[in-house]
Image (tube, rainbow, N blue to C red; front, side, top):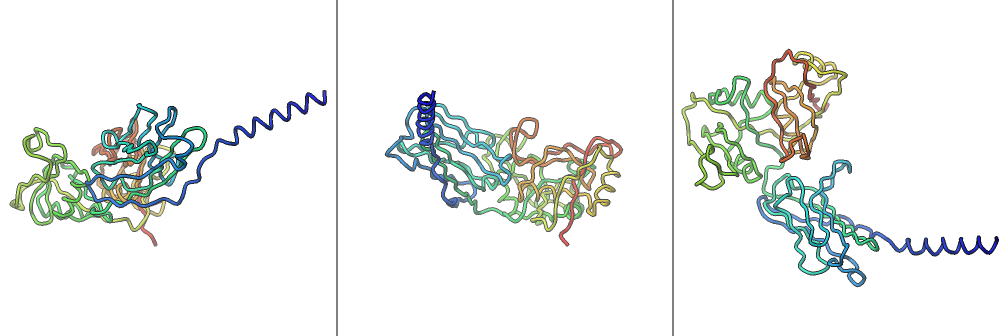
Length: 341
């Protein structure tokens, strides 16, 4: 009996020594790669111990992830195993493995936007010695301290004279955008098929995907311009909001609210009901993401999605617009804003 017990212990010890060979190579501090807005960039990643295993070996898996501060909000970018490769979300169709040699798992991202900025994690998994590397991608050439957004009020589209457009942006904690600001937003991917005022009195709109109703298909991507217009004419407006100097948040409530109840709920919480400029700044500049439609100060209902997923803006990161519903409806929550003291 004693000899049998010894044999069992020895067997378990040997088995444990075999499994202990499966290790993970520690990740160094994140490297930094700088890219220009609209350009292509390569994020380097290589199998660190190429003497033992080849990236091209059968069963080796490569996974690229965009890392969020909250790991639960990480975004899958690309997964590769042998000949099988899959890309995800906004990275679909514009991310590729370079594979210059059998140890190369570098990621090529095309048409860089400001939304691509952040930390990326490369994992090469072969079951024996896994490689983990992180790279920070910095995107230059954009207005990272602000965000351009199209706006129209409760009265509907094409209802703003120029002076009304100026006031509308001010009411939403923003200013009328300049040509340069709209141009940079277009380079960052803004595509909007309604013409709006700019601060120089011109009326323009940004198109990244040419189509019939939006200036036709014969013209390439760019800013479509109506030129300088009579300031008594009616259009939408492009506003520009800067980084927040306070806290934008979803106010947790036990039930849905009417508009008046939403305004009061924020006041009771020591804040104010958030404006459209607040939600765009929080979404674009802070990566705010919540799949709950909420009242804003202009009577509109919107929600910000930075991480596209099923039932929550599945095709793109965006501030989703629900509409201007009846203010007596108890169908929505509320977004609040509190200035820093």
